[in-house]
Amino acid sequence: LPQAPGDANDWFVNLQLEGATAVWAGVEAVVHLQQALKPEQKECLLGVAQASYHGAKTTALGQPALPRWPGAPRTTGQVAYPVPDSDDPKACEEYLEKFSTFLRDNPQVGVFLFEPQWGSSRLGRTWPPALLREVISRCHAASRLVLCDEVMCGLGRHGHGSLFLSTAWDLRPDAVTFGKSMASGTFPLSGVLVLHGGKTLLEHGTKILQSHTYAGSSALAYLTAIEILTEVPRWFNRAAALGRVVREILGPCQHE
Image 1 (cartoon, helix red, strand yellow):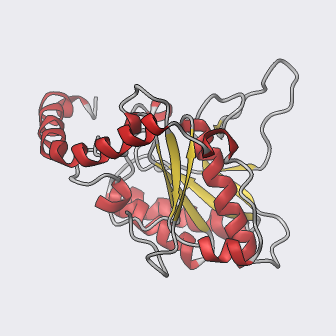
Image 2: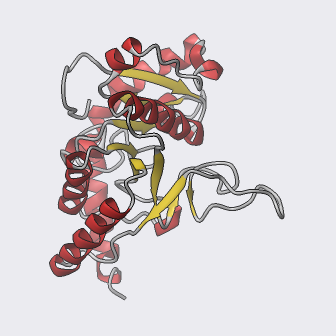
Image 3: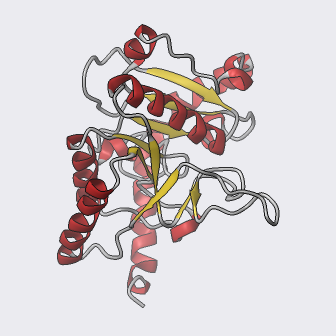
């Protein structure tokens, strides 16, 4: 599991059916945790990237949010934070200043949602690892919680020798989502790992509402997921090798 603050045995899992509901479940759990940790904060909104995709833009989280039908209200509670434009060191320094300003000017945002590797919203680009690590550190220093959405890049597909980029890059989020290949695609299965706070939520009598659909998941899905988690580490080197091939072929095109 990715490292998290506090008791290493204080984590829990919420299983879902597909990626978008896993993100919703993660947000619900982390917002509940933030409210338990900071009861004086009456409003807890969600920070999402200006360009992000966590499911269908009409019903899921992400920016820009779209109405479910013409004239319908958009998903509320999301506040868009800026995204980095470059991995150039000077650009990263400028971005950190911009993000710190966003943190200061938006105290109502209690939880941040990050994609270590963007999906279709930014053509599979990754955050500069050191930059994202620092951004998350600044979130925690400001008493904000962090959810990393790894439905796209998790379970070893990133080629960095671990199940999650959060582990490989030492990001230390408070929760991380997973999906897609969890049950090989044969059985629908996704979820969120909340890496600490289980005892806090129990002490506050908090009920996680978004857990009904897959709370009684099929035994076949569970058994398949166990086999996937056993098998995937054997393919870490293969994923890394293919990443090197892709960089060799497409690397010259990245600045064109």
